Length: 116
Image (cartoon, rainbow, N blue to C red):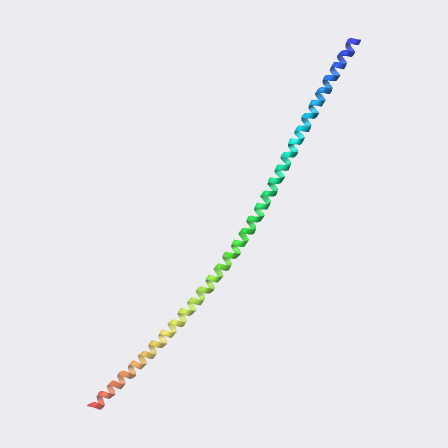
């Protein structure tokens, strides 16, 4: 009976040692899992922040591009208006010069008739 008690005590100690080792392994795995979870959470937050900043940057770039496009369009319209005004001025000046030239030709023609 005492031999059996000794074996039971020895077996009990082995079981307790094994339980302690399993508990330590479980704590170690839990700690590693919590570290990985924290790391993943940090990476996720950084990714969300990066995405948010990228989207804001894209929106700012789109607004800036739109403003530049509108500014260029306004400048182009001003240039077209300016060209149209200049064309009108040149046509008007040409018409006046032709009129003056015809009047001059008529004056010269009338002078030559008076001289003869």
